[in-house]
Image 1: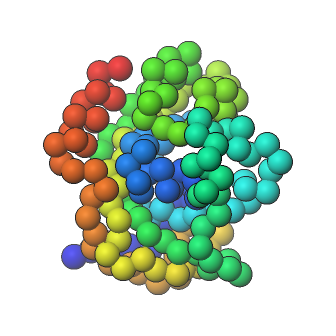
Image 2: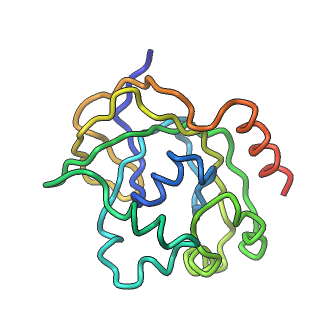
Length: 170
C-alpha cells in the first residue's frame, strides 16, 4: 500500500462534489504530471460575497462551503488518481456542464480565452480521514505527514468507465 503527502488545494464544495460522485472532472488552465494526490480543502474562496454564484447547485455549495477544521488544520477525506487529461477550446466547455458543479459563467471567467485542461479524476474516500496541516503552495502542497492510500472509489468501476468514455468522446 502506498502513502502520499502531495495534495491538491481545492475549494471544499468542489472536493465534496468529487467525493460524493457529483463531479468527475476538474477544469484547469494547466495540465498535471501527478498521477495521484490528496484533495485538500481550502477556505479563502468562501469569504467572497458572491461565491455561491459560481455554482449550479447553490444549496449544495452552501452546505459544503467550509471543511471541518480549525487553525489551518483541515479534514482530508479523499484522494484522486488522474485517469486522463484532455485539452478543449474554451468555446467548447459548455459540453462538460453535467460533469461538474460550477456555472458556465464561472468556468468561462476562469479560463478566459485559454484552452481548458480537463482532468478526469477517479476519486476515493479514505478509510481513515485525517486532520492535516499543509505547507504553502499555490496548486499543490504537501501535508505534514504521509497518508495511507486506503479507500474505496466513490463511483463504481462500470459507472466510472462509462463516464470516462463519455467525457473522452465530447
